[in-house]
Length: 220
Ligand SMILES: Nc1ncnc2c1ncn2[C@@H]1O[C@H](COP(=O)(O)OP(=O)(O)O)[C@@H](O)[C@H]1O
Ligand SMILES: [Mg+2]
Image 1: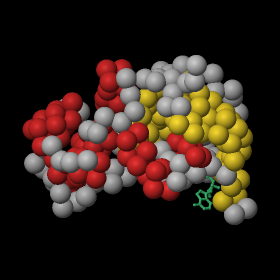
Image 2: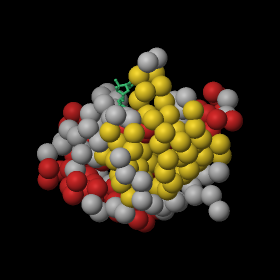
Image 3: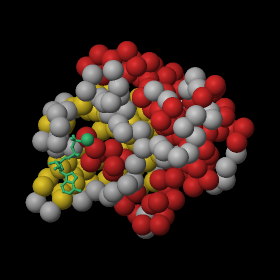
Image 4: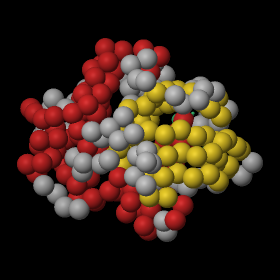
């Protein structure tokens, strides 16, 4: 049987830069995996391919048995919105919208806004009393939790997090990672987490280690 995520010999070439070189691994539904590697090793490129923000130059990427190569640009965008939620290092919240409105905007782009559901998503990340605050009125850790609520509100099959604690101090980072792992455990959503923290990577059974676009382990 196919795994939820099947990456087979995937490469990505930008002009003359081989950003990814023959990457292969699988992940099961509900599993969480870590991606590690130095700056420029291809971590974001890989996450962008998994999130269907970009397409591989060669190789096969199957998500939930859909071969992403077969999708047109518009079908890929639709597939992305149904499949993936994103969390970025820089949070990327809209500064003049409240926490609640930031989450509701993601619902609107996906299908339609649903305030009680958006409030529930904020509750799940421990922000019950902060729904009506602007990003500037929230700490970095709280802003990232809003971003996590935004990523999970549409019930994606996977969450892709690109160095989500890169802008946070170590204590706040630990709390944010804990929330992400808790949500992963309770929701069955596959989580792909780019991290520089070996202690975080140690918590998972599967770490993809990249160097110069290539995997330096077997992804097991
Ligand atoms: N859009 C792009 N055009 C050209 N080169 C790119 C582009 N995106 C990334 N690269 C190059 O691909 C390599 C991998 O980048 P990236 O995936 O961002 O690494 P990481 O996230 O591990 O720091 C780097 O050499 C980077 O300069
Ligand atoms: Mg990166």
